[in-house]
Image 1 (cartoon, helix red, strand yellow):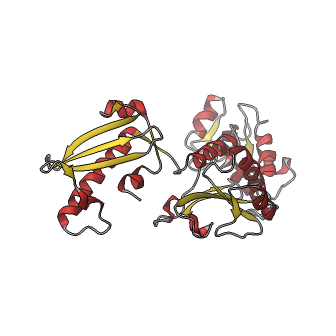
Image 2 (cartoon, rainbow, N blue to C red):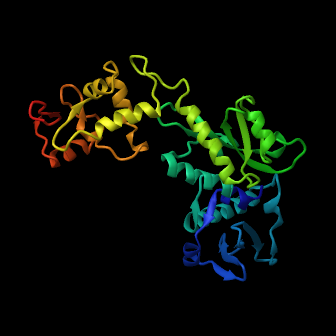
Image 3 (cartoon, rainbow, N blue to C red):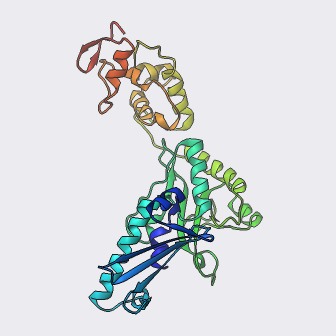
Length: 329
């Protein structure tokens, strides 16, 4: 992978910003030139119509490309110094002229946007070490189980002797073998249980609309799997979260309810703590008046700084700085 590909692999050009930065349009490409290291070198950076970034470093003394820059194992501190200065310049261009994207492939980013629109979920990047740092997972907000994982891998991990790299999306489905047999671009799962998981190449071999039903199915598995249990043995699922939030939505302005009352109303009187856990993740399901829920003594939720202000605006009275007057409200 080139220096430029490494730095710009998860970026999208913002043409208005790049023009303001100093890029100039030359035919179908954007071009930018800048001297560095006290004028000893000149960088020429181009971005083509597909958003691919290439660069060249010119030694101004010879007016020729500085070839040691591209050596796999450069020798000498001077070469390292040139390379470091060039990379700093590229990082500055990336920050000023490009929008950061979660993933490298356009299809992965489109599906990421679709997941965000459907459930509000953002990818998590749990691994810090390269080359795993760009692998992202999508978790169900309640059960915390994965329902999709985007993994950049070598093609040969999926198709023997095939060269290059690809981003895979791993999904859990009910009929993995049938999916693999039906769709080009759908493979037996890489690094997962092949009976239940598939790996989809995010190179547009499969259409987004063919992948989306599999994402929905995988999301459903995550929602209704073993899940995370709270006190009382209740399993946190989407259905349970919606039951809780439907009750919260019925609390009128100027009044409060307790976690225990909500638990009783949904038929789970032993699961007041579960109600609190669901309310802490309520944003994943939409807007609900969660500020109207307090503990049995009227105490406000810790770390919910805006709760008191919102309740006071609605006319709720307080016994002290952190407790609602439960008799009144």
